Amino acid sequence: MKSVPIYIADAFTSRPFAGNPAAVCLLKEAAEEEWMQHVAAEMNLSETAFLHPAEDGYGLRWFTPTTEVDLCGHATLASSHVLAERGELPEGVQVPYHTRSGLLTARRSHGLIQLDFPADPDTESEPPPDLLDALGAEARYVGQAHVGYLVELESEAKVRALKPDFARLANVPTPGVVVTSPATSDKYDFVSRFFGPALGIDEDPVTGAAHCCLACFWSRRLNRTSFRAFQASARGGELHVTLAGDRVILAGQAVTTVRGELVC
Image 1: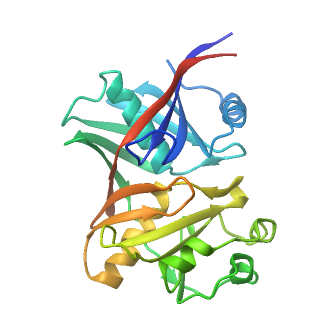
Image 2: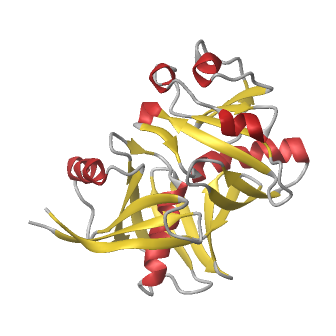
């Protein structure tokens, strides 16, 4: 029987019950993949993160209820927030994470946690059959990146109004679909939503990995490298996004909602 500290934190928000909740398990050593997948299915959140001490930092893996993923922004932010609350992420100190996407880092600065992630540039492509019909949208642009397809719509109103056919969208050969448009409010530069039924997530509330692609796309569109972004899900989330060469700096806040112990 194991006893593992476990937390739930809402990421990319400054208030509880908004942003994107992630479970964070603090392990003493690396765990078996099958066990981690069972825990993620039990938690039934879009992502569960598993941290264990490693040389000069932590090993970090992310699981949806159905599969392991290569990169997850909000669960990394949640993990960093939990470490900060435990006194293990001091202000201004960079903490390395060893992941399937290489070395990532987190730093706490001026009330925000900054994550250093690889950029995920898109290339213009033809939409696959059923993609736009499943979304119920007319696209201004379609691109493809590691995170999936990027679809630009005409307006924020059209992004917010989308009601995808998730059963149909799950059959499109892609890990996810990022839908975006310019923001209506002066507070933000662009808005987005992320759909990933193939990953077991119909709609993700706030998706850090998608913004590694969005940073590249909106840098081309707006001829800038720094943005304020809003993910327009039902819960909603705010991100500070900066494109720095082949890296993207994602910054945001998080709020702990659950502290407990996993016994299994």
